[in-house]
Each structure stands twice: as C-alpha cells, then as structure tokens.
Length: 159
Image (cartoon, rainbow, N blue to C red; front, top):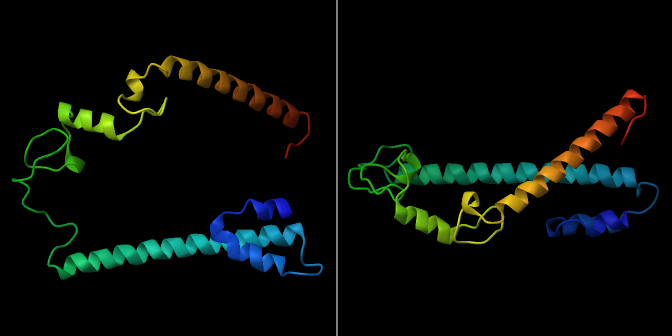
C-alpha cells in the first residue's frame, strides 16, 4: 500500500493525506484500490464538466460579440500560411505546403524518431536504426503473444 501511495500524482495529494488518517480493518488493499477508482472517476467527471463550461463560455462570448463561432467570415483577404494562396485558412487548406511553411515546421517541431529539430522523420538519418529496433520489438512481442496463447490453450490462465 505504501508503494501505491508513494507513486500517486501530485493532484492526489489530498487523497494520500486522507488515506493516512484511515484506521482499522477498512485500511486494506482492496479498499484502497476501490477508493482510488472512485477518485479517478470523480476527477475525470470534473475535467469533463470544466471543459464543457469553458466551451459554453466561449460560445456565449462569440455570440455576444455578434459572431457565431461557425459563421463564415470574409476570407478573401486572408492568406493561407501553408500554401500561400488567398481565400482560405490553414485548417481548410488542401494544397501542398509552400517552402516557407516547410521551413517553419522544421524549426518548430522535432523529428518523431531522433527528437531533433531541423528535419522530418521521413528524412531522418536514424530512421533505419529505429526501423530495425521496432522490428525486433515487434518480433519479441509476437513471440510473447504466441507463448501466452499456448499456455491458455493448455488450460492455464495468466494474470
């Protein structure tokens, strides 16, 4: 139980404090796990409600200003940052990215393979090494799945 309580995230500090005040036979691992599940559900519900109220507040603000968030604005003066053409925004763009946008992305975002900026994953020098590693991991995973299925067929269950 101490190990579980020590790895709880900071947002559950209040839970850890209240659990330390519990005494008697109700202070067992089953009760701890059940209370953690309930606390997690409550936090998820609070987060969902907070997001919904934020969205409602934003919608009300837009409507109050006389614009709906779904309204069509005059886009003829807007220039797309992705392709450079006028008449639409980047989220509506179907064109190929211009060189300016590509350079912007290379500076802002990191490669998904080596985590360095300045190139994309498709151009990464470390890509071949990463592909070999992922292939090995995939093969090991496949072996593990196959062996666990064999155990289940024999009538044994894994936890």
